[in-house]
Length: 155
Image (cartoon, rainbow, N blue to C red):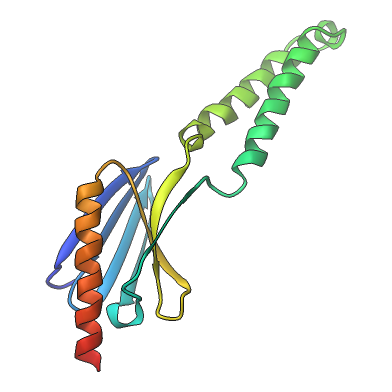
């Protein structure tokens, strides 16, 4: 990265996202524990119009139902005759179901993000929202201006 014009850092659900751009390229870096990734997209390939959206991660409802089934199974086993034969089954089912529920707890409320698109309308990247709306809006406005400037240079 050279001569970064604007940068936005977002911490969300254990991830650290770093968005930035210079005169020619948009950079998206993320880190989660030991894993990290990066992407770079030329600004002249991006649309200046961004889409705001919200939702939950894929499969959230299904995972929540499975966790609930394990907890319900634990309650049923606890009050059944199986509890005398396999006394640790009910606590094991409950701990597993509760653990899955706790892991998903941060996804209960829908997340919001901005979709950055290519000129052809396909999704290029996304900016996760957190409570820094002023910084994010400033970044998105500057990014739109930089995209316009990059298109003027390449024309």
